Length: 488
Image (cartoon, rainbow, N blue to C red):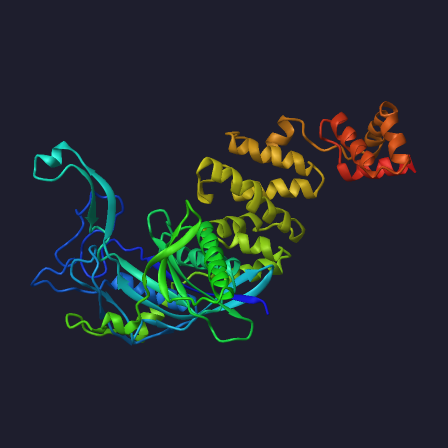
């Protein structure tokens, strides 16, 4: 029997708040080490934590977006464990009573929709960060330090608000896991609760991987920690699944543990034995009252929710946009809004073409220029006009791409002005195209002979010669039809 790879994902999304989960310290990225760690963050004697209202509202927004149950009363607990970057010896989290329970997230796999169940989403604070291989130079040596490589602790992240989102083990393999992570990444940015910056640690995933024979009970899982890129996630899961399968087939046993992925060696390696809930000795935090959410608060937040990606994707598909393209269009809110503005008032027939340009050339040029859709040199209206000129035969698709590129290179004229200024109007006159075809056939006797001997590629070459002779202006459909007629 074949092996089945089972994956569940735990995601830590840093919530987009100005201050930390339980203190007023800044969450800004990039500050000098230990300049943003308040007395509350490291639990100095006499301090008391206070929950960040904006973080709570963000958690509720997420719960609404995934159709989860918003707990009207949730509890903050102390999760006790020792790490050098957690100086107070515990993390404030939620255990038995999370703020969001259940929920669902749809993903597309080979154009087929799959629903992934969510277990929960709970609020917690982040720990600090251990920095290894720091070099202590002479300046530090004179203050009593030993020269050489050391490890340091930066507590700026301590107390930063996180929403931990836990999926059920519904994912089968690395491809589905990455599709889920991408969809979740897009969603938290779409609803404005997380900036999604994986390089800065704002969106981090842990993958719980196990294998089993089809139809059997779930196998022993191993957790791969802190995957901060989709590419690394895919490679890590594939390696770990292969490792477990080979181990079991050799008669071994998978040990429940936490592992790290080494991208340089493309392998996972053991970090520590996996803890269970009882090892953390959870108990309600005595310094924090239960978190009570009113029905009115939920209604107020619900009234500010945008149209969600799934609903928008389905609406785009109703406009004859292919499923994969619609999924790409809704991978970011900025792209979706740009596309919607582009098709406002457009004929239904040109909408799929506009969609292809948005996910293709427009996205590529914006990426190269480092610009968001909101600052695109090609406005949504100009994109609509550009595609309409292709549809009505004024210009060819190739010329449209050239004009699109010109706009990104600084051309300020409108699309119609550019077409006239550069003399780009497509030749659609039947007589003019017949004349071009006659000239090409007379000048390319060998290609004509090749075509008549059964070489279909020769026909494409003849079409190319017609386009070349017309400097790209001939209507390619009419040119091909005229060639077919003349060649019999």
